[in-house]
Image: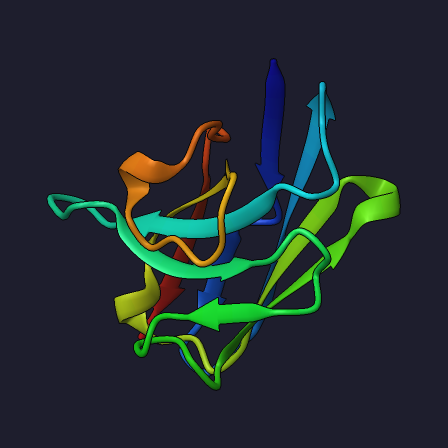
Length: 123
């Protein structure tokens, strides 16, 4: 059993920055790949980006590439989503999740999920 807890969400103005964290506990493994997803009201869950088990390779959706960065600290069982140049379209609940292969963009290929953290970007 693996438990993931996201934090760091909040309200920011367009053009601002925010960093989310995801802490893993339980029977964790440092070689799990991990991903970030987001879900806006009335929309399907959308892939944001993923990071390899080593933390050395990342993969991003075109909508966030160049603005968002995923980093990993395996010693702390934590990954981060650094978000810059935020726009109202980025408003969503953001989730982290684990997978056994990399890169995976489909939500149904991930095994464990956090509860999500709300990010709201005002215009």
